[in-house]
Length: 112
Image: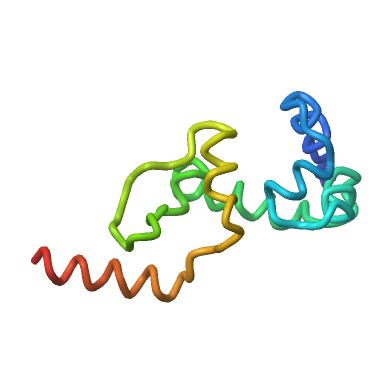
């Protein structure tokens, strides 16, 4: 028997007191994307893959990402509140993965 994923995004969004527009701005997608995710029309496959990642690695979603501050210094601080998420998204800039990786490699070489 195959199980169909039923997203809980709308429930969690409402519980957080957010509109679809507010959530879309926090996440960095369009409001229609949020509507599609909430209805289950799109996006559930990616969420299910992330869940499988976490189960396979025995970790939390937050553990999959390492946050680096803008001054290129490695930090272990992860967002712990909606305010932290707002601060992270405030500039609209997303750190480049390739530059973050190369900076981390340089820092590791210096420390060894």
